[in-house]
Amino acid sequence: MTHPGPGPWQPENQPPNGPARPGPGQEGYPSSGPQQPYGAPQQPYGGQPPYGAPQQPYGGPPPQGPPFGGPPPQGPYGQFPPQGQPPKKKTGLVVGSVVAVVAVAAAATGTYFAFGRGDVAAAGGETPADAATRLLTATGSNDVVGLFDTLVPVEAQLSRDYLEATVSEMTRLEIFEPGTDPSSIEGWGTTLEGLEFDESSEERINEDLVITQASAGTLTMNSNLAELPLTDSFVAAAFPDGLPADETEQIDFAELDEPLRIATVQVGDDWYPSLFYTIADYGLREEGLSWPDTSVEAVGADSPQAAVEDLVAAAMAGDLEQVIALTPPDEMGVLYDLGPLLLAEMPAGTSPEVTVTDLQTNTRESNGGTVVVIESVSIEGTQPGEQATIVIDGDCVDISVEGGQSDRMCMSDLTGQMQAEMGGELPPEAIAFVERLMTNALDSGITTVEVDGRWYVSPIRTFGELFMLVMQSLEPGDIEMLIEAAESTY
Image (cartoon, rainbow, N blue to C red):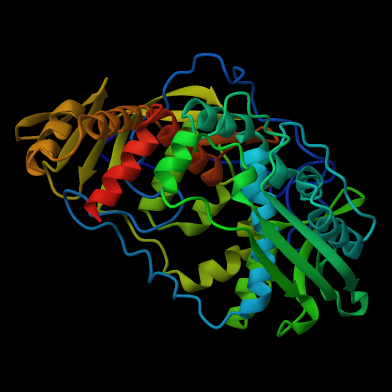
């Protein structure tokens, strides 16, 4: 899509109110303001070819500038407007409580992400305490699938779209044994005894968000890497001294400095525990802050390309509220609800010193989303003649500056320079991997999803695609080679 230049690139017109937040029967998270419950579990965002079939490599350079509101980099013609000070380092959080939350989160998002199943049948609870009990009970019964099914449907959906891909790639890379079944991998276990919730201490943030507190219970976690379906070659490279011994850790909720807190949200008539809201709740408590009474309203865009273009413009202008409003209101509901606090800490946006005057893109479907791939971008500074164009051509990048010379940079040239600077010490396999990775990166992009007829940029799915890009750039044997290279270097 071409934008008029040389004037500033403005986001496309949006409806005056937009789909403020998902209403009854729609998906999304609860709002801290007077919002409706967030609706039933969503269907996958888009079709995709089954894993195991030949796939095109992921790729395309990550956008030069933060798609999700972080500080932009230095431009060729000046510094982007200040984006505020980075958040201060979190300290002083109740360690025991964090350990317990991380234990649950790791089981829910880590273990299941890598080894879960592809069909999610969410099971909600009748009350917030019931929802939190289902989560911890599923953990205690060593039922990874059941544990994941208890989470908010949209959080389960996020991992669902990448489960089979991850296990498939780990098998292709000869990390897992051939024929590894994603739904039946052992290697960890937990037991839970004496669980009790103090329902009188529940904190109702709004009609759809309640914080529950576990006052008693003992969680015992066991890990045994020997039970994982790891190949002999990977074990020999990653654990030359043999696999670590079995490990056991026990957490007594009653001995924590404060009760274990689990955020639960309402979807329709059912309650579900939320990993995202639980993490946010602990962050607010550490800072001595309360949940805001209002939230940011969703805006979205008319198309995947427009969502990316509008978000780039908002990020360059330092418009954090617009950046938030262009992320999915279901996946990033917690960001919407924390938005007022974030906006209070950020300086007001200013006119950008660099403007995108033209952005050419294409799209492809991948893992439940639509990936917007940048083909070329033209930028303009505030002074006459400050113009440059970057064009991606296969595995090369062409850069031209008005009034100056053009330059062509190819990935093979870069890896050749890298090898020369390293004195030829890098093995050919490492150089080949780096070249594949950079070439694939030129075909990567920004993942967008459609929610209630509007398009949004999904930061979580975008990073998921980048993870898959790295995985698909590897070849069998590369993991062992990289481990050996790291050991010889360090």
